[in-house]
Length: 382
Image 1 (spheres, rainbow, N blue to C red):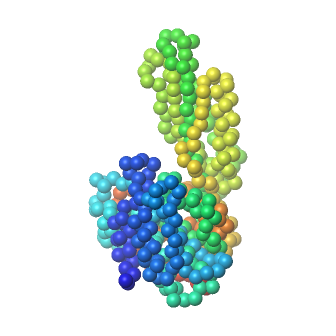
Image 2 (spheres, helix red, strand yellow):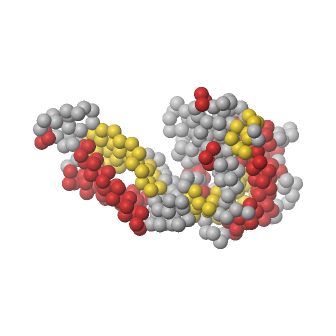
Image 3 (cartoon, rainbow, N blue to C red):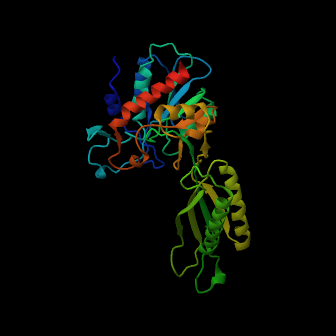
């Protein structure tokens, strides 16, 4: 069966819903997308392996497709899932790829199903060529929620290669650094009582006021200690995102909850940050007499940095004419890099088109992206 043309491939990928979300209302399998990719790559001569994510009942899968053999090689990686969508805000069907105004509109068109047909088109040029090092196309699950696909690969220690490109939308600018992210919840249990007599209870809101003040003080401390001029915002950030507490103005607040995120720069460790926060919370709990607990809302993503002088960074800069840069959003790069590969983030499209209605990939970036990937394949596989 002949390989579908690039536009048709993206049509089929977009038409196959694969939303990942913490909400059961939204969360969907990605297996249909993985099986489509495996079929096309099989036809090109790749050896394909579908790997089920533990605990997903086969609904969530990764794909490792390999052309050629050898100890090194190049990985072209992407995630197969999308975020949820507001269909009433779309001007077209989000699951029907629409060609308009030199743009291809569709859910996931740029973030990041569009990368796979481009990678396949680049690989097709080498399908009959003996490779000195393998070319691997990697497709993962649940990047938009838990990153369970990348975590599963990290635990397996696969795939093995020397270089990796993660095709997130960067406008074909090589990205060699991004911040990490951790999301945490602080819960405080006080003691409710009649507000006319404060001694009857222990106000959780008042304890939370101390926690918030301490977290802001901690943020100042981190920003004084850590600084990287390679980022637009050069230090770590800590955002107090939402708070809920109490139930009535004439009752002493018995429970309060705060959720926040912390985005670390390279050189900072999420687990060490959690330990430091816990020590501060324990001190407040002892002084206030309230019970204070911290819960990690999801596993978090480490900060990531690839040296500017790495062979992959320099090759990508030469092929694109763009100087490597940094971004504020997190990717699967630290998990892939942790497998021992030089890793960059680089793909067509722009991140400001992602996660919103009328998402599109600009057609004028498709051919340059293909040629860039071909150049990398020549450099690292031939």
